[in-house]
Length: 452
Ligand code: NAD
Image (tube, rainbow, N blue to C red):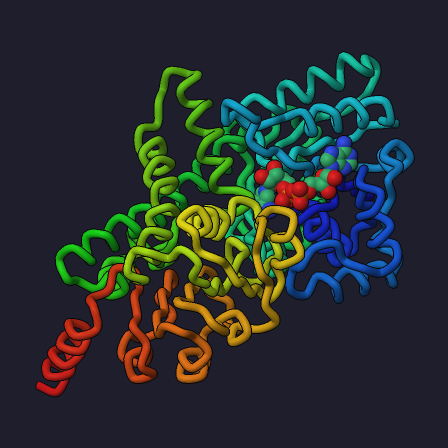
């Protein structure tokens, strides 16, 4: 199949490279000339594990190429994917569809022969109808069908997610789109990936309903963590205790500083707006958004409290800036709100992130960037783990402590057992777990039970 991917960002580039790896002939288009120039020169504009090798292999085989010239590429295509951004619209939280509609207009003028146009971007219910209307209006004689195929990959594990998805969702209104879409995804049938054909509107809604559900699950365990702190219970054990129930499942039950990233914040907001517009409000999602917003500032207050309240002029080491490990994506990362609140309270911030510091430079002011976790901790009155990069999981805590002027470690991802931090001489604060003494008591009690 000849596939064109409009938008070569986190989703377009990964999807395009994976389709090329399946044997399709793929052209990735982007209007960002510097991005395309970098790709043509053998570089990768984003950090995604394994993507450099995948792209290089498929460029070498001739299956994958890059261009800024949309119309030439689209003219020869069987299937054209739209994978452009759909950020929150400034002011009201609806998804901003201007990039999708601009792409649709450009595609319309370039169509030759029957073509399936597919929205892979996350788009609100009814967007496919509007894309169809725009293309028909711009090019009344064009032969085309518009399908919806939302993407569920996770940054940091994107290639594996794309190649071994839990499911592929395809929404069609025109039966002529079915065979080309089956052909595009046929290589996945070897992995027995379920392909779910639905109506276009249902497909569009599935994506939002899935993301909002996951955001709600994270927010739920975060609130349970608050309760654990209040009553002296351990949220990690609660999460395990409920997650082992197959009806609940263990994923997305890690208490932390609140969800962020390029999808959950904007998608929950857009779904809430759609629901309100249709007089079918989603109260659970409204509450999820409000609770999550408060949580990020609450995390900064937790740091301030651990430092004794007054942080003016003191240095806080922040480990991890990206919204999750294994990406350089800083969009809506919890670190942004946490750092801002710490700075507002008068703290100086020294930060280290394995991949996110370049992107962070454009979003944060007055940060001192460090070269390693220990360098960040140098002279700090507290170290805060915000993102659970592997590089932070096995730190030499005694060395970390000796770099700091006060031995305070705030672990917003619960990656250390409290007794380990205490053995290193640190005052350790984490999320939803009993304070050190109670933890020791709990551990001893459960040890006794196991021994009995
Ligand atoms: P991104 O910002 O990384 O990439 C979008 C790209 O589209 C940019 O490079 C931009 O220059 C390009 N673009 C915009 N208009 C264009 C046009 N008319 N012609 C050519 N190129 C154009 O965005 P992303 O993270 O890849 O997200 C894309 C979509 O996929 C969004 O709707 C998002 O919600 C959805 N999604 C993202 C993820 C994720 O993890 N990032 C996962 C699933 C779904």
